[in-house]
Image (cartoon, rainbow, N blue to C red):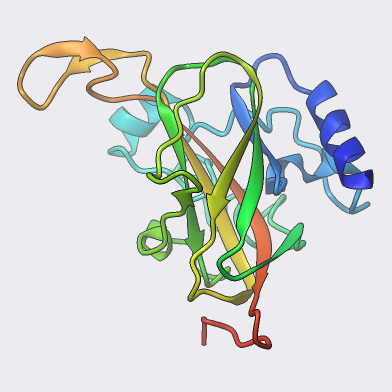
Length: 217
C-alpha cells in the first residue's frame, strides 16, 4: 500500500519539460520524490537525462554517454553515478533470482522508439561494458518495449535465474525513434540514423532462493 502511494505521488510530481524516468524501481535521480531517504537531493530534471542532448552526444562526444544519462564529457564520478551528487547507493528494491519483476516507467513526452533494461553486477564499475552481458527479457519474450502514448507504463521483466547480487545497478535506456535518418540499406526513414537517448540507474539487490551468494566477487 505504501509503495503504491509513493509511486502515485511520484507521477503527480512529474516535471513538464522532461521525457521519461523510472518510477519503480525508482531511479537515482528520482529518489527524492519518494521521501524514502531524507538525504536524497532533488533533481527537477530527473526525466531529462539525455546525455547532454542529441547534438551534444552525437557530435561532441562521438555518440558516447555516461552510464546513467549524464553527458559523457562531465568529470567522473558524473552526477548520477555512484559517488556523484545523486549516486548515493541506496538500495531501492530487493528481488529474488529468476523473479518476474514489475517495472514502472513514466513517459511525459513520447518520442517513439523503445527501451531496454540492463544489469551491472559491480556498482563501482562506471563503464557501459559492465552492462553489456545482462540484458533483461520481457515476461512475454524479447527485450525491447515500445511505449504507445504518454503516462505510466507497467512492464514485467524476468530476472536471470543464475544472477544474485548484494548491490547491483539496473540501467534503463530509452532510444527515441522520432528523428528521420539514413537506414542500413541506404534509404531514409523515421527512426533511422542518430536518435536521442535517455537513461536511468536504480540500485537494487537480487537474493538467492537457496541462500545468498553474490555473483560478483
